[in-house]
Length: 369
Image (tube, rainbow, N blue to C red; front, top):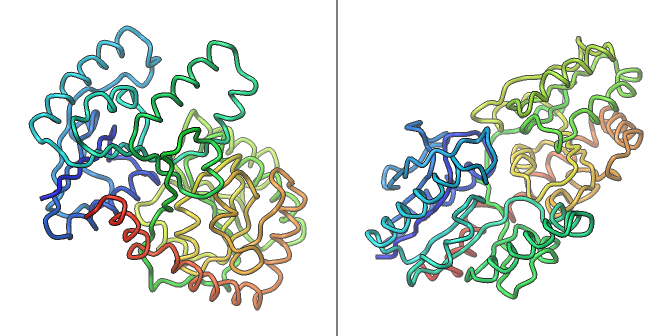
């Protein structure tokens, strides 16, 4: 019996990491002679956001970091000590064969030293592009801290990155490329709909403000089209975006909506997906868009979109940050339903390379299960 333990902070929030984790553990739970455990540090007695196979075991360490304070606050350092002690005790009791860490927390620094004989794997779900920029421009102290992070990363057996471009940010020789998986869908986008969708956490890095700014140009030429942005608020960004919408006179055509549990179903009501992020590693939302045949218009930001979209086949890449180019491409696609139909059909074909069965075979080879 192989025991796979996922060590993470929580599984109750909407998010790409949580959704991908659910897909993977459900797949592993259905393999013979495999036991799967998710060990959280701050689940707060909340149910999992995404459905899990009833054979997946859930354990919580009840550390509950104070997210309103710095990780280096006295309160959180005390909690980190509690985290370390409880996690090490669980590892000794369960004796997992494989430990996978899909998120960053205090335990990133000590997992290599308490793993026992387990195969230890770190997943990188955010782009290393931002770390590279920090190394080039930050203070001496922060460069030391980032260097220490790199040293710790080399202690892991494998570092999983989601596309080939991300390998350049990992200094060790333990890097493996495995993309995120997506369940193939029979759902189909309505390319006749005069609606564009965007989705993601409402945070500055998603640059929804750029999309709204570009929509001023779009609205002048196509006043009967609407833009809907789905997402959970972060750092009060939603209020700032709503104020921007009002100031630009777009209240009747640009709508902010709450996050939804099954975004692919919602996507069937739209004919184009738009992405304007500053950086993306391998956004699940683009996989979900392609899975329902939804053509994509995206900034060519580092590094996810270009590794998912087949440019001019199932979507169009736009120079990152260029709102005029974004508006022009959106208008061109909005004005050509036949082009949208062709891209929609191609999207359904292209997404097959990221199917759960295909991607999870790569995981099986890596884990020896």
